[in-house]
Image 1: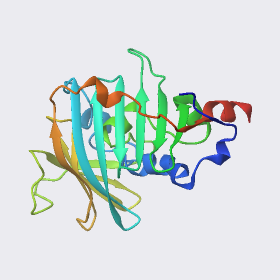
Image 2: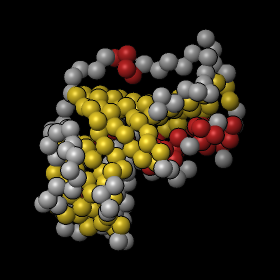
Image 3: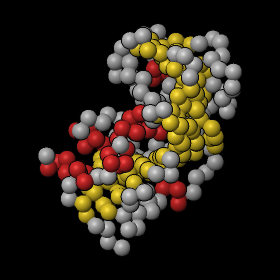
Image 4: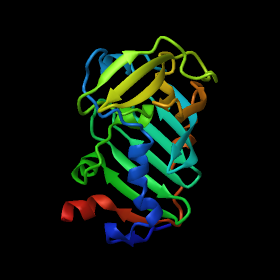
Length: 228
C-alpha cells in the first residue's frame, strides 16, 4: 500500500510533536562533566550482551508511563512507549550515523528523521542514550559511589548505587554491570523516577524490528528540515 506523503513537518500530530520531548526525558540525562568518577568509565556498554529486551516504568508530568526496549547489538533498536508511540533506530555496522522512524500508533502517522537532522533542530541524543536510557554528560558534574542502599525495595538484580550531582541537583543511579543498564534512578529525596521491571538477554525475533505502518500517513522530516 502506498502511503500518503505529508508535506509539512508542522503537520505532525500533537502526540507526535511530544515524541522528541519524550525521547529526551526518558533517557534521563546526566548533563554533567566528570569530577571524581568518570561517567564513560562507570556507565558503558563494554562486554554487554548481543541482544537485550527490557521493560521499565518512569515518572513524567506526575504520571507513570511504561516503555519496552529491544536492542540488537548496536545496529537495531526499538522503543515502545505506553502502547502509543514506537521509535525505531537503524544504525549500519561501524557507522555513527543512524536513522530514526517514529510511529504515532493512535493517529497513524509515521515520521522519518536522521541523526544529523535531529541535531539540527536541537535534539542531541545518541545510540548509547537511547539503548541504555541514560545520556552522556555535557557539562560539569560530580559522580561518586553510594555505599549504603538507597531504597528498601530491591532492584530486579544486583547493581551498584552512584550519586550524580549538578548545580545542587542529585540523581541516584543503580547501575547493573551485568545488564549495562540503570535499573533504578531516584531523585535526592529517594523518589523513584525510573525502574526496570524486567530484562532478558534471549535472542530477539527479527519480527520485533519490522515496521508495521500500513495505512499510516508518512512525514519525511528530513526533507522539511533540509529545506529550511
